[in-house]
Image (cartoon, rainbow, N blue to C red; front, side, top):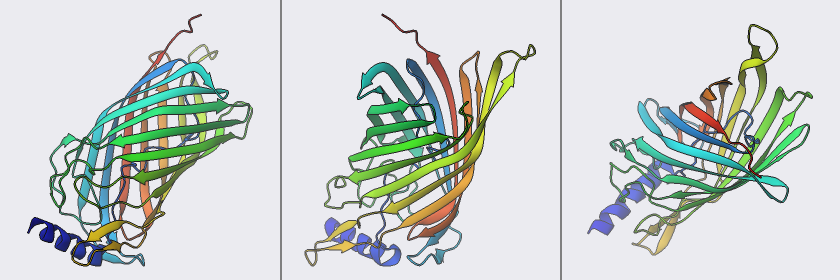
Length: 315
């Protein structure tokens, strides 16, 4: 009986919203210099704050089918990122982890989510490789999302997506001046999803493209000899496309329901402030989603507080 209820739920979901299921990649988590790895021998401890407010729900033609859902998702947590002096293929090796906590975690194009603030899916990046040249930076990484958040099919209090995710990323930052103050970046990320917990439901592969065009400004101390802080600001963007269709089994017929592939595009601004003597930074990003098909459309806000520890080289 429970299986029939679940099937009926997803049949209705597929008819109304084209069965669109989302991945764990947070849009807006990358922006300016997205193709750049931080300097070697640094350890960064950071606290992100992600807020997504949905202003409408769009169908496959970009028309509003729920013009004012008034729905907000929030995520924060504690993360760490380390870049070593160890070289692999001429690149510095690094690794990252984020233990997130979320409320109203969005699984797809429906709004019956009322999850309390709880542990979500843990992000682990065991491999990040970064290359640096006089006018270009390059980065390649592998990351995974572990389904540590609560998940039960059809539940309204889920804090995770109930699936293991592999993701590959690669990108670059180009500098237009010798001092590397004027830059443009792009990062491509490709998500591949396992089946959802205790089901045969599989989210389609997702391609995300993020980056920005920015300028770095140095603020000098009173002696006008050395910089005391810097500001990096500019225009940022993201695009996300469902590459393969979602697969939702219909046990009544033995077939699968395949959703129409969704997409989203957003444009915004970013500003980062780094205080050199304290090694503290704060970053702010805001995106307005310009167009969407078969998914929510709204605004994304991302704030990050970080402390960077510069570690001395050891022989």
